[in-house]
View 1: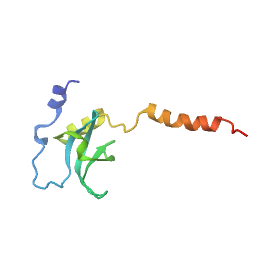
View 2: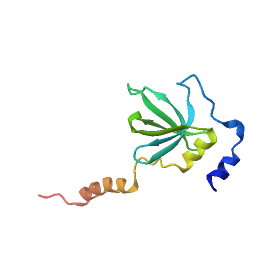
View 3: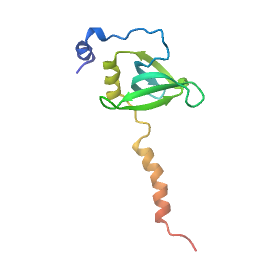
View 4: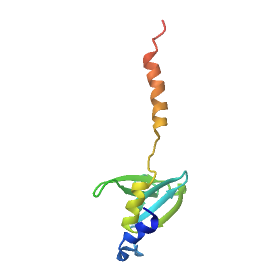
Length: 119
């Protein structure tokens, strides 16, 4: 399906409304340096003692996975409708670690287990 077809399916009354409350979570598409893209609810989070970008990425209709992002790694932030942000969440590249990275972590541990101890 093309982007035009997707946009035509979104009701016209769901456009992103501007808000005066900058701490209120808003739906957005977030792009980071390193070609990582998220869609979800964005807000400010200071849980770690500094201002971080919090992205609650929908994993299904009712559940979210939370990512805390250093604002310095932000490439682009596009406020959008919920429908577009959920679409970006489905098609985005949110994997924080690649399979090859896990394999490279496990391989030395396996080698250490398999090697007999020297006398």
